[in-house]
Image (cartoon, rainbow, N blue to C red; front, side, top):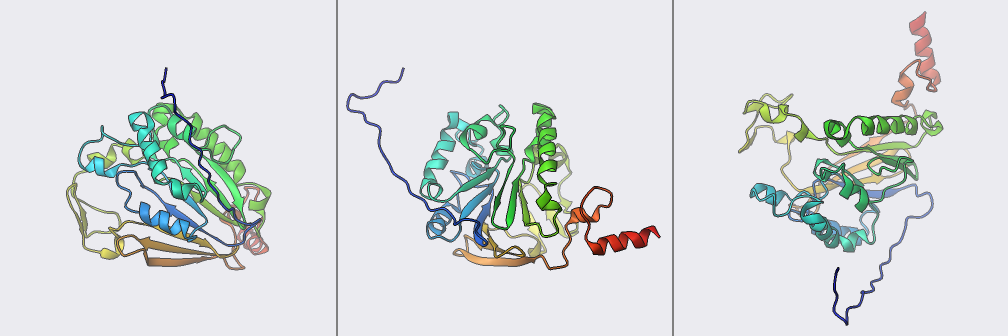
Length: 306
């Protein structure tokens, strides 16, 4: 039984937020991963820029409560991950970001640090994502303006040996149906953005059993060791904290900006992704799979079969 002082009262706090307009054709999304309570280098910037209206919603790609500072000091038992200390670490993280998350939509994807040994139960109960018909909020989709957003769990593949293959097959069946809707078959379909964590690298022994140092793929001069990274090609790696702002300009143009925390929230890289009028969805290139083919592809197929 929990006892409270006789004068105890439940506090009343009011929050307000403003939603996007109906069917917005352009908006900005803040995307990041590996943000934790004890090592939240980007937290202050995210809160300040979010409250200033610099982005309209957030996509957090896993490792939601990664206390990297504790990992460095080998004190993981003090505070590590969403479920640590009976969920207190997760509560502290949410309280820390409350000024922002009470005003800006927060879309999450589970990463390997969200596994609590109970099939991601803490994550499942703490967050409510769009319904997918399976009662599982680790994968979902929603439409916003010209974009169909899809969130998938790569962790199902890394933890199949603990939780079985049913989650893998369930997500696959759902995703197959989600990506074969009439809108996707239509050449004029909206933009599709699919997000997910980097995957459960800790589930594979190859990452830790590989002899060190070794040359990274496609970079013969990049030597790696447990204690130091020797990067002889600086263009391949940026050792900086930050996040990405993805701007949906319209149904054919997406702009990506990488924000650097260590450089005063400045843009350190940017790129445009453009879908031109001759664009054909990759599905349309797979002959015989029941997708609607453009006339150009039909002509190519006819020429091949002659």
